[in-house]
Length: 127
Image (cartoon, rainbow, N blue to C red; front, side):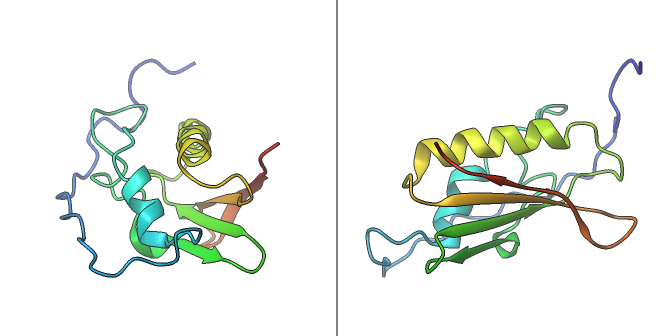
């Protein structure tokens, strides 16, 4: 068992300004920017920084399929074998379940540095 932090010196990025929107989509529709605004401030389980500051999430990593009611969020951990990826996924799931309509299904995908592909793809369906 390891003691201490897995990544003691992460790269910290500046927080981006929140985008103020003049036009809003249909009230029942979910927009990637709405999702990003809700999850960007989640704190990393290992560091006192947000997922946005650690560049784990970005607005481009969120896609919405309104027809199938599915939302894909791809997050990139700060190191290759991040043991906190599951905890990050659970934090995302809790926040998403609290903030968005119950008919959407969430797909959280972790990007793999080694293969350049996504791994640990899991549908997080509401019940």
